[in-house]
Amino acid sequence: EMQLVESGGGLVQPGGSLRLSCAASGFTFSSYWMHWVRQAPGKGLVWVSRVNRDGRNTDYADSVKGRFTISRDNAKNTLFLQMNSLRAEDTAVYYCASSIGAFDLWGQGTMVTVSS
Amino acid sequence: DIQMTQSPSSLSASVGDRVTITCQASHDISDHLSWYQQKPGKAPKFLIYDASNLETGVTPRFSGSGSGTDFTFTISSLQPEDVATYYCQQYDDLPLTFGGGTKVEIK
Image 1 (cartoon, each protein chain N blue to C red):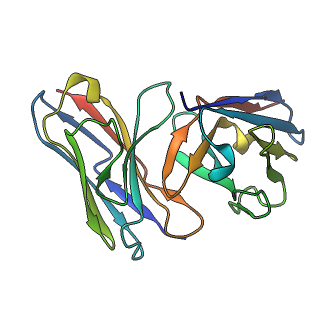
Image 2 (image 1 turned 90 degrees about the horizontal axis):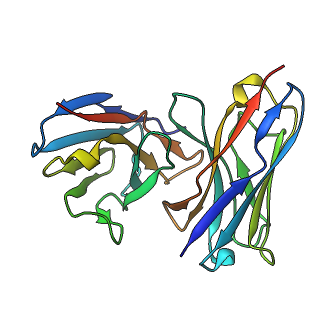
């Protein structure tokens, strides 16, 4: 069964850091671009970042550029999101998703709460 | 950025009704559009890609059409299990953007 499982969410103070992980199984992880998408409580979906198949090319939404870093370890079938200088507006469920074009597989999400 | 305008934001229909949701892109995105279903407390589920292609295993009650800037998602006969929020999304250009969502309820 193809699956993505996120972990690493939690409560963090403003200005703090958190590292999210997304473990992939059941498919050839290295064949897919990978993304992070977030959803603030009661709000819609917002794309955050993507990384290409070999991890060499990355893109970010303006709202997180310079603060978040996406990376992947194809040997361990794992995607990461390093989040620094966190703000209250980063509070959301963070989903990882795989894509060839559209987001064809999603994880269950991990909640990140930024609050003092 | 490409803005995706989805309408209506919510709708209520009877079981068996035909339901249509529209999504308009602020720029030509060819057919680089997908649709997702999200039930409360759950992750989005992939339904349609390239505007009109049904993902494997998705009910044929769902369909999509359109190209360029105007797109439509249709549920041919609304069922109770279709209660959810539906999102369109463009993958033609960065940043990848979603519509605001359409909440579908049973009347």
